[in-house]
Image 1 (cartoon, one colour):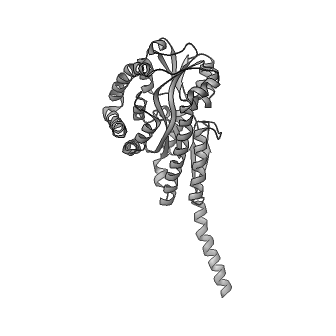
Image 2 (cartoon, helix red, strand yellow; image 1 turned 90 degrees about the horizontal axis):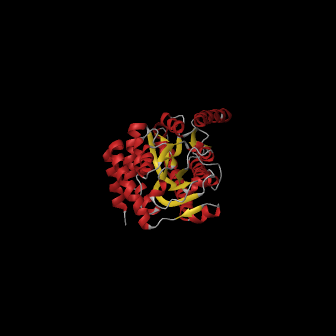
Image 3 (cartoon, one colour; image 1 turned 90 degrees about the vertical axis):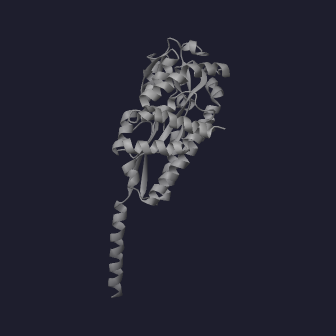
Length: 335
């Protein structure tokens, strides 16, 4: 009798365990930087994977797809929207291919420092923007990290004032707001996907580009660009985006683990990128680039030319409400 009870108990335990094994969820996590520990996106991804798998006891398995393995900008974002990809860490240009309002963050010269930008990203603005994105695209924005403070580089001449940009062909990420920015400074803009940028510079399809130090290093763009101007025109972002159906399909414990994992990833991502930003001049000069740091007055020239038309463009093309919400958050978090 005792033996039969033991057999029954073992069988019952096996039946209970079987559904749990099948209940394991796979979270495919894509980003665009190389699979190296010195790359902010990848270091953050590894931290996310470690936390989520441990915190869920293995019920969520994280698979990382670095270096654009899941596809270029639009395919990756379409994957998150459709749910064939659960999570992506994408730059604003990629996000704009499915959700144009992210372009408001491309309005130039809006932040005073990294810390000011982070206060905005962590404010109620994020929830409002994310809720809108969930409603319209089925994508939730869980957090915002840095894609580096964006600067201009080129192969022709030093850029010290906007006049030096006239006639230049500048690569931009596929985002209309960056087109408006570059053209307001007298250059022509050419939208080229990130994966194609090094070749475009090498073959001189364009004269220059604009990116943060992290990305200049990640794609070895310095090999094809002689001059850098640290104007800091845009505080570009990498957003942590999850498919809403997948997110809501998680248990409360799993969802908490994903939220905590993103928070850990964002902290690592921000620190690594901002450390490079703050040492941009030394880093780029060591790589052989000629680096110019504009004076406050010169930055003011860039701002005077670029911010009003880009803001006006954003109000007309994206929506005044999106622009107003952002500038309210900027004002509320200024010190």
